[in-house]
Amino acid sequence: MSVYTSLSLSQLTQLLNQYELGEIISYEGISDGIENTNYQLKSTSGDYILTIFEQYKVKDLTYFLNLMAFLRSHGMNVPRPIPNSKQQILTQWQSKPAALFNKLPGQSILHPSINHCQQIGTALAQLHTIGQKFSSYRHNDWGYHWAKKTGKNLIDDSNTSVLNKGDKQLLSEELLFQQQLQDNIASKPLPQGIIHADLFCDNTLFEKGQLSGILDFYTACNGSLLYDLAITVNAWCLEEVPDKTTTESTLESRYLDFNKATAMIQAYERVRPLNDHEQQHWPGLLRSAGLRFWLSRLMYRQSRLEEAELTLDKDPDVLKCLLLKHRKNVSFCQSLCLTP
Image (cartoon, rainbow, N blue to C red; front, top):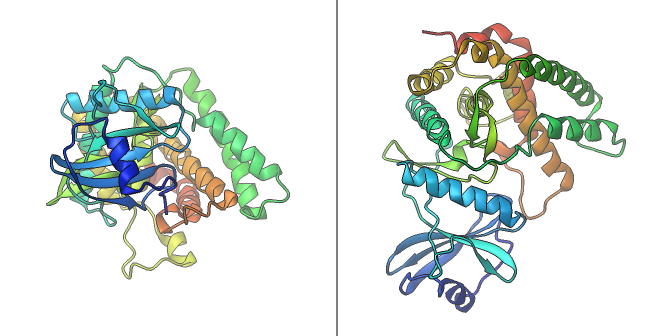
């Protein structure tokens, strides 16, 4: 459950009086997500999403909302922040920041096809290309330095129950590899720009098989464009489990689907081709992306967030097993971005 701030109809009406929405017909809380309170509502003027932000700073929210407005103005299907009567896209409810968005059509998909992966590859490349014109800058709070600090804390914490001895050994080895990777990249930095940094299946919408929306820009920042592609390939291109059940054995055997991954990368490259330096570091960036989400999901598990129950796609072991596979299959990883 992710409705941390409950609103009655009278409270909702009071908040929405800042906007010209007409009469509220219906509203309900949205349980997806683990960080913000979201309500979907229908009024006589249309369908909307109200978000109350539970932890973000106003400075960061200004960046996120301005980025969404910018991408929307350049033709991307992202939620449009709606200004209130004072032409502000960020408002407040009981000292918490809040914003209103148009509701995009479609539903998230759980089992993406090759065609879905192609569409996401194209859209991500468009986001990266359009984002080059966005003038604001935001540091990546979830980059290598965060991973190094978080990983070492987990390794050194003798009281943690989220890592066994083997996990700690894996994490130690991976942090060493990532340090070497960062040193190698430093001499010739990879192309940088605006990245989504969390483009998982539940952050998109499809309607009648076509991509109708990209959501949740609250980890967006400036970073390596290749890293963002690696996050997205890890998220979208896993092999399907035939019986739709997940056990330890299926996690260990499940890996990237070659056809899905190459379809996504080739679609991406039709908009923004990868350079030789990016192709060289592709296997390492797949590992970086796997490590980032393994660590962040371990953090959520360790904190035992009662409000946000971990579901299958938030399971840390999914990313741990993927990371292990990346370590063992460097040639396969390299082949994904070399297929003509």
